[in-house]
Length: 267
Length: 340
Image 1: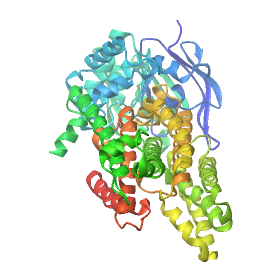
Image 2: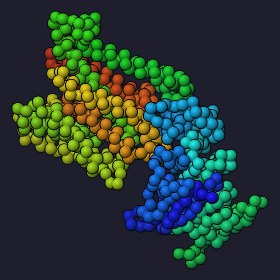
Image 3: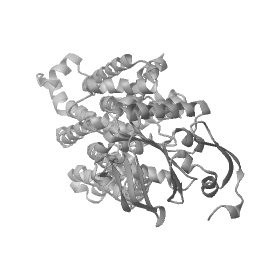
Image 4: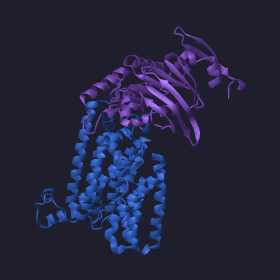
């Protein structure tokens, strides 16, 4: 099976310091993959590299088997949508305006919006439950509503891969779950591959098919939630001691007990 | 009341917003046309509107026809295109820099044109006919210099603004030095620095017109790309926009528009900063509407201010730049206090 996304020995450096060092991994089509890791481990850099916002100094990223360097930006936008943290729209852009911008990669200057575009925009708003908000300016919405509007824009691109950078930051617990459930449904119903950076490890464990743990620019664990989220990994990578058990689906759940004392974490 | 209308314009209901925008554009059109007719009527000799319309079609004869055809019509047209170019350049730069304070000054255009114009006017006064082309070259050179200084593996708005401030200060020092060393020759230069339209005629129109047409068309072509750019670099890129290329091309369009305007009218301030803000208040931030709205509003504003400038203390004529700044600064403060 061809990977939705594949990284092969990618190396990214800032000012001579390696942020990602010889990273390789493989993301299956139609799965939810979470990238976890402590602050400064290179998660956001990895997401930028996967979305061609950064070009690695060495190594290659493949999208459905195609070298990302050979895919032009417009072609890429039809296959991959990316949502970054804290995007802001001008104050009078409505939800519908925003979702219509999602059709931009599919449009040419000589043809305006088609009937098909309108259908896809309506579909995207229906999928994310923002139809009632269509004529409201995006900035007037609550955090959860805004996030759903941005996801609707991404859906309007009709991508096969959706990348998200911490989609639940700044949201309360109910809205966090709402976004995670939405992503899960989009993944199941539309065979959309979802790749996201997550800070909340319990969310990652509950919703992911596959988890990649980063530490100091290297992958230290990758696999199913039960394989990756373990007391050993949490102690080594995040330097926390936890009480961990498994729910009915055999997914790990944990509560942090405290910080690891210095000598126990590996350097 | 007005606030409610504005709220309508910028959201609430999709259909009413489209209607509102269309109505506003028609209003701007009529306003630009109205100020043009007003400007043709007023002056040392007042001419009735009916004669003005006849004369503008080249049908009137006699003194009023001569006055309109040889003096007022070309000046009004030059003023209109100067206003249009500066307002569009400002609107474009505000999107490109994602900064509401961006205007043609910020990319060094004014100081570049200023220094080049001053050099001609003060050092080579016998070659005054070179002021326009020299100012144009100066403006473009300064814009390119700012761009080169701001380039570091790509263009970031903040670096452009910082480079623009530095280049402006540097060139401004040159302007001040020349004015101090040749204080006896400053008068003509001063008029040009303030910005004015006196004695502008058909040749000036032929200079600015091609830039207005080409720059205007290219700006409209890029309207949707400017909308996408306004969502931020990362979002724009993920929507498939070539962010760097778009920023480079649209800045060049803005530079051409603004450079052609300052080269015929001198350093007219405030139009490029304020008109796009006022237009945005009325039609919203969608560049497919904002660009034509800014263009029409810029036309009307400069034509109107120039008419006031030349009739207020007749027979003494004020440079239109003074009227623009007098009216523009308070309005700008009003906008700032309202928005921030």
